[in-house]
Length: 86
Image (cartoon, rainbow, N blue to C red):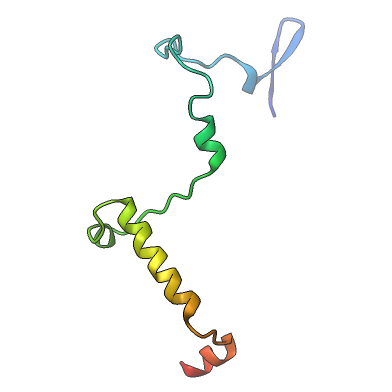
């Protein structure tokens, strides 16, 4: 990492104040989204044609749960048999 020399001290460029004057954090609340972040999220971007099939996130989750149930009940076929069937 590059260091910028100022008078008698060395200051890391990453530590230099690069905050723009138009940013105002005076009313910011620390940690307001921390709980949600800690839970973790999976963001999946659907193709537009697929997204049109589902009115909201709940509908997507319901469909995926149903599909997951079907997959779990299906007999497991080893990869070598799947490839041979192609």
